[in-house]
Image (cartoon, rainbow, N blue to C red; front, side, top):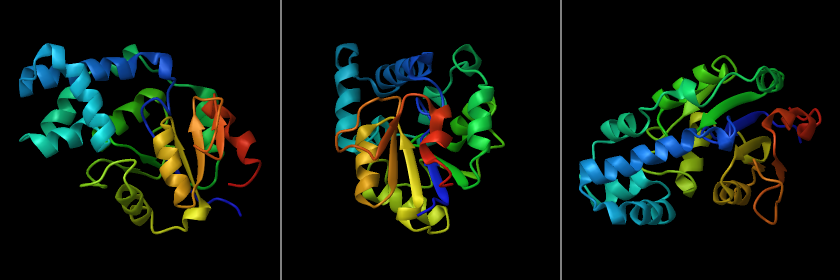
Length: 212
């Protein structure tokens, strides 16, 4: 079957994981936990990881345990100079623009951060839309409800006609269970976590071999 809908993760999927951007965002998350929530410095990193594992994102963990202004949190943690870390990749833009199917950003971040990343990488004209943390609320990846919201936002395509690309194996695993074709980005191994893997996202058209 040919694919008609693609769901792309944002952070560390559309840009190289060694860019340093996610490390900068993680430091902002740590600062928020300490400065805004009052978590002791020596508990910040472990609590962040605990929330990530249990709730899917640090934000969802905070929402479950504290009174948190979602927009304030997202603005705070994404307040980093993107141009210091990520830049346009003409080869990637050509590769993605050549895929005729509809392409959506599917991210646990918010649309504002997604738009900034797309602008910084020169990919803003490539995507049909953005499915963000607000669209999938109260869920987040890899919760099953997040995929339901994404499919609904994309016009309810058949899961088996969809491709999901993500750098997190727990996300590709969950999407694969729903029947989507899954691609683990930035990895060179599979196991039962995804249908395919790509070290370089620009090689996606070769992987698809004319199926989109």
